Image 1 (cartoon, one colour):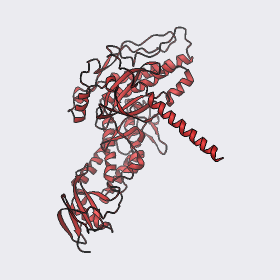
Image 2 (tube, helix red, strand yellow; image 1 turned 90 degrees about the horizontal axis):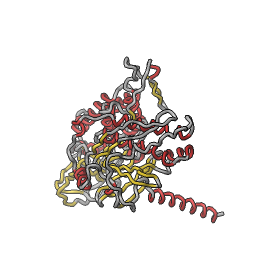
Image 3 (tube, helix red, strand yellow; image 1 turned 180 degrees about the horizontal axis):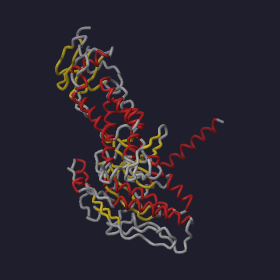
Image 4 (cartoon, one colour; image 1 turned 90 degrees about the vertical axis):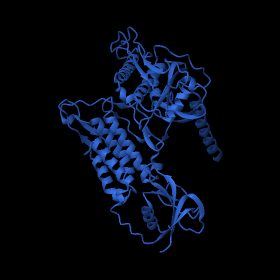
Length: 509
């Protein structure tokens, strides 16, 4: 019996290993042993690969139904192509990372620096066939595109994960720049279900790939610090399918809510502030009000402490039409809302309010109030309650969170606090205490008590609230708000010289 269990366990492990290995080796659109194709001029196959209706095809047949879905997906891509952001919004200062991308993208031809979507053919609604007229839009990527030649010789290939449509991989370009590669997952939910129903792998791939094309357009059109950057793309033949697509984007760390709950309130507040700044931009974007239909923590990543949205293939700019308020019904698992119907026959601010309530239920309730400074909690509770009831729009919400940031960074939130120390603290310049640590929560250091403070007065207050604290050490490190990091110590028996630190020792009890 025991041998049988061991054999079953070994078989499961082997199958998992083989599945992971195959998924990594056969990245759609990315073959490390394949020479990159020559630069394409004119037609980009992303929108030219839609299947034709065959003459005599029965309306309602499986082939006709799949072609109808591809046509609708194609038309959605065309709608997003037609929106052109203002020229001023596209101009940005070149940052150090973008300079590195420019270095990687030297000797790029003009045809590789522009994504051209032209002469896309999609079927008409009838069975007699037909195609769409020529549609041509240039997506001049800034910084310059990375392409097939840049991902041909990558290092450190790692499979990161997949969703319904896409698989994501981490690679290192030129041994210096880590990026993410996204491509259609041939083993994913969308492809598998489509192939089971229609038995047409290439057409099913085209249907799924339009979601990546749509995401590429949105990543280029929506320029914001809390939206993942698009670096480029590559078309290559893969799995006997011509011109499979891989996009190259900025790399972020997955958002792990369990880990995030264990971080400092300051870092959790930064995530919420990043989110509302993003939602404020989406509510007033060059495309109109954008809603994230698939709004879950897994759709976001963290880059240098900032929250960024990474999946935009399920974003929408469509505003619901209405005749009366009853048509403007938003349903969530725990709450339902009815919004007003405007005189123009549109549900007022529905996209904005949908985003805002999702931010409340996935982020604000867990991250904002807990372990916040006591003087800020009434304001934070008001923000959580107002967004949970949709009493505020995004403009008021972002204004209130910016107010919290100002109170926190300026130290204004400490003005009403009683700050009469119970003991005296002797400063010792250019000195530190290397040991005698104790743990506290939340802390920036997993083996000690490292917290941020506005000034020495707040550090003394923290020390007196910790029964173990007998000294603290001011470092020369600061957080994203400019607050100073301080180590709190349970003793001062061993003090060593350190020119970058100041130690304060409690001298009376």
